Length: 286
Image (cartoon, rainbow, N blue to C red; front, side):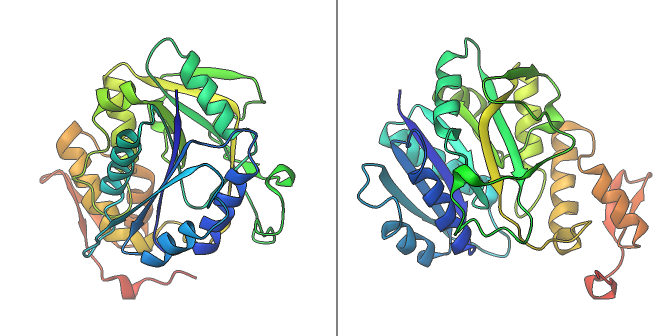
């Protein structure tokens, strides 16, 4: 079996290079590295000339056009298609902000090979603080804080779970058969939010649960963000509406409630929909 690491990128070129340095230093390197650039030809050039060039890891560089909103779901599907066409039968999806631990590729590869039933394999994501520059610290020396709501397993440990809302696309792996069974990410989602929630719920309905893995750790590089993510207000409301139409209930309820408390949205019980009620420039984000 052969392994592909797939990442999508627009900007964040230093993060991308640090991810490639991490893959270079891994105890096992992927056979394929697929970079899907969202209208970002510079990311492709930097990858072609980057740390993995000439190492035996085949580079597959794909460009996806962008209109008004980033087609994140489409980009992941395009990356998977490229990996499968190249011959990969294990797909590792890694967010561009994530630096793989030295054991990530090997742990994911062995876990997918050994799994007797379809599963979404998810490693631990550890968050780096703003003081950590992953460009000057070797991946073996990185430390980070795990997400408090997700399992934090030691290397060599695993745990199966049907708690599908905890799935996220920052770092996960699937077999080619599982990917084809699920059909990839729903491309009705545009921009930020809900496409991975949809994927996790669809998998759950299909009887494909999560297997949490220790040893497939990834280190999420710091970047500024907002809480709640008001910069993605329109994407979140639109994508939540798509999810509701598909599955009959609302995702991202915590963010929608937070937006409501800021006076940005309101829920109409009569219409059963969330509506944006204030322009973005009226909000102070600190």
